[in-house]
Length: 258
Ligand code: MG
Image 1 (cartoon, rainbow, N blue to C red):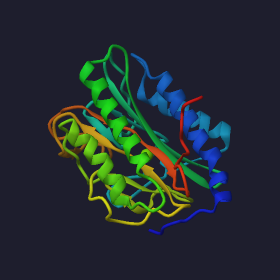
Image 2: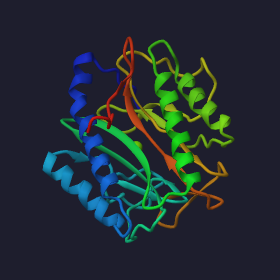
Image 3: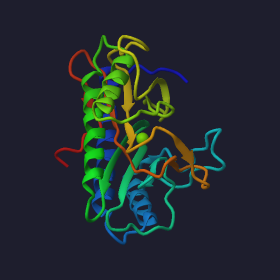
């Protein structure tokens, strides 16, 4: 995989992709309610993609570990499912913890973002897990500055997890984003400050902490995609696409104000 460094003009060209990804996550999260089927959330995201003339990054996605192409346009991970949840015939139940992960291409530029929500009546421990994961994302974004390295972002995320007694799995993490969904550099959710790849202005990265209540071990679901906690405890996953600049990082997939 290659590292893409964008010009300020190209970062501006990427903004519609970020806004659209934010719109889809806002709409699907709002639609997620008790009794709603995961396939309906996928259909909603698919309609929005068609109406926008965007291109899904997921539907034809077929990495070496996948048994077949993903076939859907959004990841829906429920409860002990935390990453890459393949939408299937399941109606959300009261208190379910749902993580939505969505990436697509608009005008040739990709943005990638995720959000976790609770459907119906929340358990306090689930709200806390989402809050901590969000705090880790914010800490990672704050460290995503020109002159820093990927290890600074990783370390900032890991510190938040440790402060709350959570263990961090570093198998899946953030990545470069540009013309394609997954570029270099890899950004683990824990690491050593001052190490790794330099964050140059023009580098665009997806930062995506995900934590589990009581383990850092994962198992693959029989569907070949959905990644679950090994001990059945619930997980949360949040993500933004962030552009490195000379100054403040730009959160391309910001949902505030939508
Ligand atoms: Mg994502």
